[in-house]
Image (cartoon, rainbow, N blue to C red):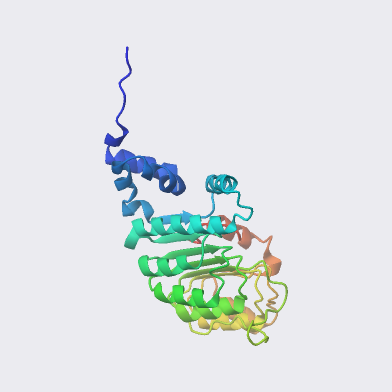
Amino acid sequence: MAVEERDWAKLPRNVLMLTFCKLGMHQVLLRASSVCKPWREVAKNPTLWRRIDMGMSIRCFRRICKLREENSIVDATPLMRAIGTEMTKVAVKWGGNCVEQLLIGPACDANLFNYVADRARNLKSLSIIDNRAFCNVENMAKTLGQLKQLEELSIVRCTTPSGMMMKVVGTKCPQLKRLKIINPFWSGTFTTWEEGTSTQLGIPEPMLQLEVLQLVLTSTTTVELMKIVERCPNLEILDLRSSPVQVTNDDIRNRCSKLHTLILPHDIFSQARNQYCDHYGDMYTTKPLII
């Protein structure tokens, strides 16, 4: 008895939507959207792209390595960035104003950030992981200045001095509720590239809505801590792991007493730190601080 062939193009739309959600974004972009016209139309549904995670996946990396071998390319970095940038642009284009959460990994170039700022105006959460293009202060300021709805920002492994990042973020995103900066490149006092003078980490403008602040492996000092607490009146959680800050005198302790959770460098094994990380994720997580 002959087995009846299925017409995969006639699968119900809701079934395709569930299938695409399980496939993952890279598979939808690279494979499923190219199967047939009905599948491509479903792939373009904006609701699929509310949360976009474009960190370099293993499958995508293997695909790039294969292309590198086929084209005899020794340095795959430019190719990786080109593919990563184009894939992210397509995802943002299909998501449009529905895109609320975006994670960008290292395989993207500077052109992507202008595209995101123009197309994803309703973006609420942005995570930048180990991306050198975003480390450019001008790119950072231009991108963040256009994302007026942004509530959560995570910057991990950025070569820009933390003081510069805080200055840009505090000026361009005073509406932020959650901010995470993890800078493993810190090795003492930062200096500005232009002037060669110490870069202060203090927030230049009051951030009245900021509730959660992570400054891990940054150059935060005791003076800067006082400025942060003063200019963020609604701050509830402050994480200062692996920073040189010291809370010693009563004045600083009193200012920090209103915080729901304060994690200092010497508190890395404390109960507060463990509870905090269980709820919000550990220091190198790419997940949102609050889901």
